[in-house]
Amino acid sequence: MSTSVAVTNRLLTNERDAEMAREVLDDLVGPAGQLAVGQVGSQVATPLPPELGVILQQVLRAVAEGSSVTVTSIPKELTTSSAAAMLGMSRPTLMRLVAEGHLPAHKVGSHTRLLADDVVAYRKARRARERAAFAELLELEGDEV
Image (cartoon, rainbow, N blue to C red; front, side):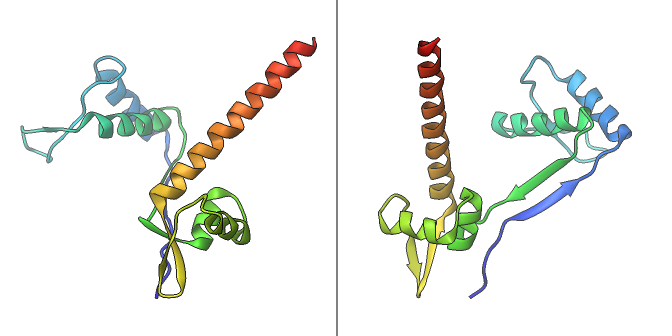
């Protein structure tokens, strides 16, 4: 069975790209202007859903600022090694979390697999716990002054 890994594409931008991105951003109305796509030479443009428009506007802002853009796709189902890498932990630590029921997983033959949505949700929850703990530390430090 083959292993799925994240696919990453990097777009290195130049000043011409930045200028074009600035022009497109200037043409948008307000902070969340409506974006549309169409074929070259066609008068018809199809509006994009607002969620996609926001993503593309973030890309345009990055290009307008002269930044490079990296786009990564994550497969729906991850190997334990891929999930551990996404979480910034060792595979044995990930397997302990799975065994303790903190992170859902399923078996494909003898291999353990995790859904990318579950891994991303766990990462968000962990970051929220870390932020809360940091805020509590800051509060305690402020009380000592």
